[in-house]
Length: 251
Image: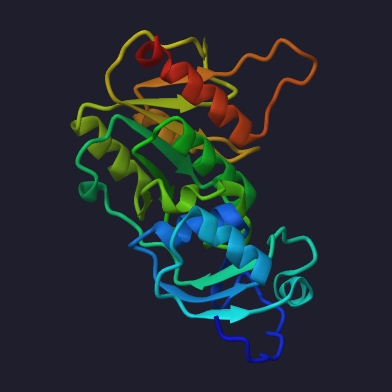
């Protein structure tokens, strides 16, 4: 690692310019992803030692830094743990790139990067084969999204599509049952007994699924909450939905 004194980098704008991933789990997953283009690793000596305990660093250029300089670069709220990796956005997949689709999560215009990252993490935990997002009305890859995903951004194929309706039709042609989740659906969510491939479709908080998306779902279900709070954050709802639709396969 270069020990020359580098001037602190200017404050990063997450909406423009390079992508910085930060946090030890997130940086490790990106380092291990052969499809990820890595530019430079900004790292403290202590964080570098911890990263080397979990795997190889590879040929990525490194610059020694300090926690204070990382705070200035990423913002005081970024829990970077002494490591930030400048990268190109993760390679996006096409639907035809994924040969086997048993479990898919589809996001209908969910724009909050915290929610998308958390859903990616949950999808990874349940063994999802892919997460599908729309090209428009979806968040740009940022350190916030990657941190919320806790490495899942580099572990679960992320498919970006221009026409979600066409994509749902293609999923159905591949024998996948498409289940939409909406608070106004007539049927409540129940543990699924069928074991065939399934796609879980989640909509943005507030507006939910678009009308055309609803029409293309094979089933529409709602989450019934017995407590005084009747709605959940979409990422929490996604976790419950994935548990229910994979119940048959885990029994």
